[in-house]
Amino acid sequence: MTKKDVCEIKCVNERAVREVRSRMPDDRTVLKIAETSRILGDSTRVKMLLALSQRELCVCDLASLLGMTQSAVSHQLRLLRSANLVRFRKEGKVVHYSLADRHVMRLIEIGVKHAKE
Image (cartoon, rainbow, N blue to C red; front, side):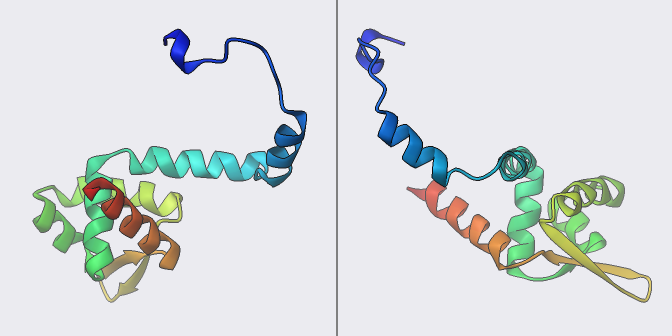
């Protein structure tokens, strides 16, 4: 840090602080956001979400697509599922995965758009 990017005097705008504080989400929500960000911080999981944003896929499909073992894919999917980013449905002996909801699709769309800017 340099002197250019910090205040040179202590001057708190109490009104601004109160206004922003009143609009901040609760701590539980902040923790969920941080956890989601941590989960999204892994390129393999991002690739899985990108693939699932195209269509529903089974574990075998994802393993083939990403050049990974089914075991490794299943492990990553468990993490994504625990963060409520994906869901699954079982059809006989095959488990199909998809994005959990439209919010996850929006996260992916925004991430792609931001990365391309």
